Image: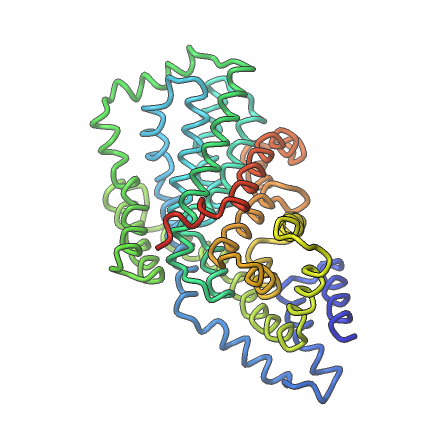
Length: 430
């Protein structure tokens, strides 16, 4: 009875727009307040909230947030886009594909989907419109490709999943590379089809690309070199064993500051305060959610909710294929109505035991979960990438969503391949 009461209370709190961190905290305290004989007290729950955020791996999250904001202020996305445009611009759909590849690389810097949309979109969307591309299409493309920001490592959701599941964050980072590349390739395939069908203004495109060609490859590459080196340094430090993900995150902050301030000279001293304020505003809500989610996970474990959910699903569906489909549908729905961070922290303790019992590798399941929730970034009603992209172009959110549907279809195709072909996620994991 108590698990049902908690589930109803949680849903009601969300429906009346109580902040999710507060809703989790209230639900976590409810059993001890209703039942004086409950095994853990309210005081213990509050201590567990504070203890849950006293975590070395968790320090990577604010550091990657700060690094991404420094890179955004430093105009790194423009440097990345220039070098990809140099090679791709003259080909069919070359410029939209350059946008997708830029999102792929910028995701390896920011670790955040909305940050990727804001940084890449603010620079590329006006340029693409000037070259004759449909405004709504290119806005939708950036919104969807921005989802790569949480799949390509380093990824903030991967860190949170690692914390919630006990999986190695370094292995999660390694596992995210091939799925991210697969999704980017499928998005580029659709961009090629779209441009073939609707045509491109080759004269305007050549005019822009010729400016880069006049600079010459050496100059364009040198200007972009330090930006291209960013993911190499961050991931290289992790995979070579030089640094842990948290230490690599700190390295990325110093690197982002040095190249933005002293190499590209696009970051003024007066901007530093604003960068720290923005980073705190971005991370603080995650911190509150994380603290409450730690307590919530302990409560649902004590109430044996994961075991009950697992028993119900495994008894209702006989095959591994069916269970994976049901979990995917559930995650897609959750991604539509809940932000990625709380979704991971709430659902991992419930779903991971089910998938583990089916013999699914926790690393593989982590990739499935994050890819599902990444699709939620571009699906209403939450669809935060849609709102960020809309704010850049003033195109209504629903218009962007409609134009994004074929792109989301290719994203879903990638999800199915990632779900049922584990090697895509695990091939690079040692």
